[in-house]
Image (tube, rainbow, N blue to C red; front, side, top):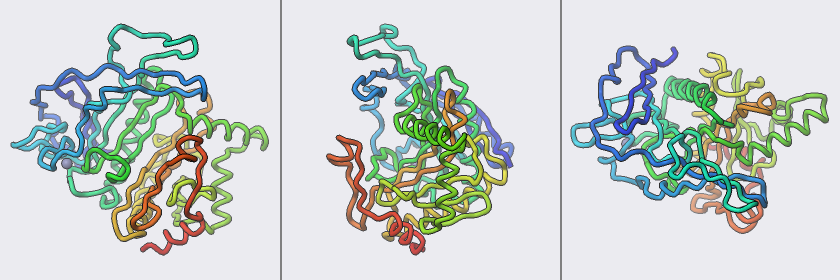
Length: 364
Ligand SMILES: [Zn+2]
């Protein structure tokens, strides 16, 4: 069933959208009673001419909430002792505009600066950043959700992708989850985020370049489809599969434990998934998450990232897939991005991908 959507405005004008699994929840009857400062202005995008990339400068993010006690969690439903970001006393899945966004459409003081030097153009970081709460249970995790709830989350992300893709100047919509203090989460409550980027991010640019080259070489074949087919054929790095999705460790994985989950046909973005594909995703993804946690017998810190087609030029080259990876390389060891990775962008992996696949297959 498609979740029931209702929208309210928070007291500072930000939008909040409930995605409910049952009708007549009445959530939109609850108003935000807090007095909030006006949202910060848009961040600044600065062009780095040396690598042809844009960097977002969002100084206001320094003041964001950092690991609050559980009775002051901004992502729990509001109760009689604490007014959180969510005015209702309960929710299923809820999405709202980030109070400390990396990108927004808010007015920039002093107008739009156009350049810092001849070499460094500057523009406002217009875009949108949203927070997605997967459950009202503070102590839960994505891996503990039911397949039905995962379906609601996928529907919510698809809804947001459709809407945010239509915002002025948005180049790509990126839903993701950071999990664990090791990754740098600032709130323990199970949640993800969605960024609507005003420029095509560097990794997507690189993937588009590769996809274009492959299409030219092969008379128009889709690169990701060919990579997936090769992995399905090789089998050695496949972790699991069902009728609509396959989960595998990439042959040249750069993280100690990395899995990609992809649909069996070329789908551009989450809104493009059929009902059956949306239903089939949850069970496989949950199985992979359980294997991640099973690897070392403790919650795995991870980043879970939906790669979707860009909004503009190159859109037809896209192939929706989820990239899940952890920086934990052993029970008590983390992989840090040090000299080679951070300064040169050259990854040196500590775990052989075939071995990682074997460990993940054995992890439950
Ligand atoms: Zn909470």
